[in-house]
Length: 125
Image (cartoon, rainbow, N blue to C red; front, side, top):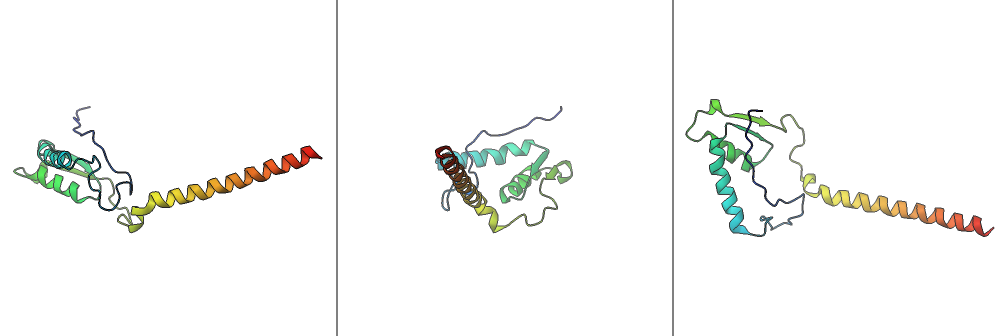
């Protein structure tokens, strides 16, 4: 309706995909720095922000409030009231999911193998 969205279409990490020491999903550190600095400047034109727990989001909010009355800035936390928001388990959730899926895939293959061997036995009879 009366909302103008500002966003960057940029490369992002998913889960632990970046690895421990890879903070630049685009593999271009200069581009990452330019994007961060541009975002901090652009957000000064905004009066509303929707965000979750993030130090970068807090920096954006501070930048929005710079030289303006904090009362005109509307901030909406998507994770307000969520328990166990910061959990070390979140870092490995994709690894855990892969393990669960591989285990279920192996179980399914075993079941298919049993069905196939039973059907070949009954067809030989």
